[in-house]
Image 1 (cartoon, rainbow, N blue to C red):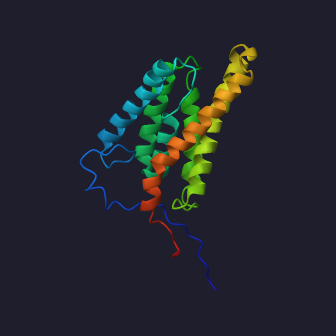
Image 2: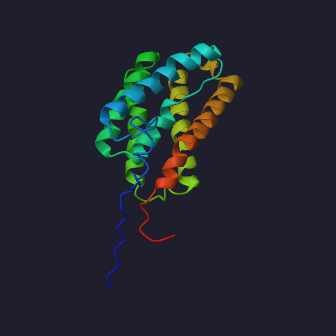
Length: 192
């Protein structure tokens, strides 16, 4: 008796791509230049528009859910390009050690690449857990850097409340971005 436990690479239907127009606002549009341009636009909104609108009081993060979704649905070469550009966007605005966001996003990318074949992306639970863990990891990585390189007194109750709000916002935005991909998931190895 020979049993193969071979998992398929997740695949997503692209049948409705032609109806969406020539430039859909989502990761993995099918055009490399459009994906990179949308990443720059999302990074600009994340780093410049939201902080100026909220006065820096509410920490919203759009770039992390966008990158996580890209890591799940896009092929590896596009994901690596998005990882490099996204971490460069984050690092040019942050007063953190060089390579911090590159390291954090690389760890998230590696874990997603190793586990994306094993999960059913048709369901909401893998998406929610992936967005939560990724945002939580980035938030804790930033907190560790603040603790080690700056004043640890900054890490008070309000700081962690803002980080909890940031993680929650990332999960909500990520789920809004992931919903069309959940409908398009066609990578099940067994019928439902």
